[in-house]
Image (cartoon, rainbow, N blue to C red; front, side):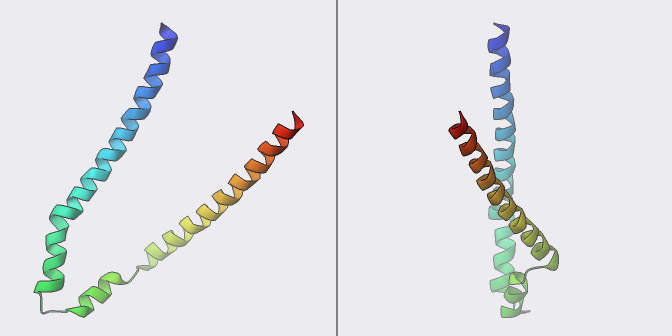
Length: 97
């Protein structure tokens, strides 16, 4: 009985973590869709202050975001290479058995 509860508890904890992540994602989407959408549209369409300049400024990537994107791309590349190496090792282990 204790082993069943222990195994079930691990599943419950994983599901709890998943539901928290889903809740955060939903909250961010709601924030963007409800609150920020009106502000962005009014800034882009309703103002005579900048027009296309405001849009162009918004589309520019900040240097910190560019650095983060490059770092993430390098990490993805490393992970893909690692995946291939692990697959080759697993194939050798399978063949050796």
